[in-house]
Length: 358
Image (cartoon, rainbow, N blue to C red; front, side, top):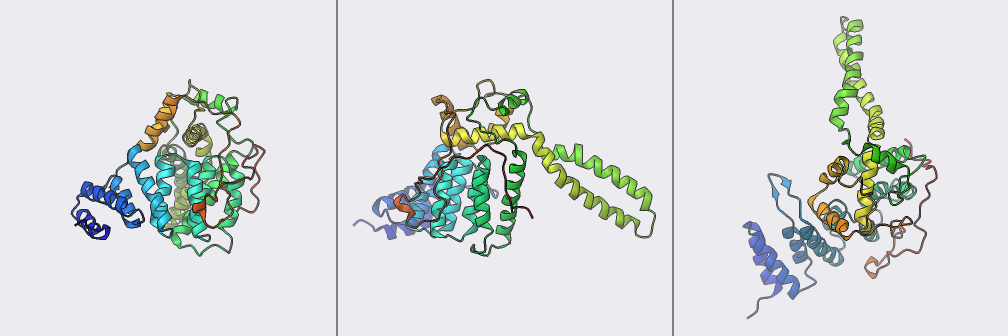
């Protein structure tokens, strides 16, 4: 007598508890064949497809693993739209591991249709738009994010909201005169990247020790000589040094971004290639020290997928623009309601983000 999907599900849970991941995966897949509406089995397929955590650290999935897990998660959120963890995991796979930023924008828009006042989807969409240089759209969503209609965020979400606000402001300020569009081979930023292609970006640690620390040490030494011998001199000097360190670090952050802009620009070009599935990086830059360093920092699945794009050798057209969803919240997202007829182009004019400052 054939066993039902629910009876087999008990075996899946036992395999999982025993650490028998392959057996749990195979049986969970069998259950989805018997009962395509078994959301828990689909979620198990996604979890068991991805590599396990070792010593509290997750291993990076391959392209096949990431794609397979994402397919299972699509089924989960369709059957159980309120499964927040599956939405988050799917978003991570789309952005970090597959580089499919356009698909990720749609993914989070679909989540917004389920939970219109949740802040996480907006935070993720804004971060994606900044990576693509779509600052006007990012600013529009930022206003919605901080509107009173949104849910009351917890402390962790508040930190993320503040981080994404600062991200928009910093990135827009850095590119206020001209936004880098890597699909344009004549863009002047390519000449700068060409000149800097043999240099890796400065690390925050290196910048800290070579720029911030000497300034703080010098001023701290002077302060120690002037007030260090007073009654509360040592305490005052400590407070001065701590305050200076925080102030100089914050001021120096913008300088570090400016010094590393060539790397940030090339990173955007990699994002554009991954999401468009076509090439825009010039051949004389591809394979350079800077290019290999940035690509080497991406997860394994991203590198695998990007290699396939390079091998396909199809160039991106100059007029390419990201395919944006309709950012208005709509119901019944599973009926392909995310298609938008609105103009998705963004101007390269100087950026104005009024009202976003503290």
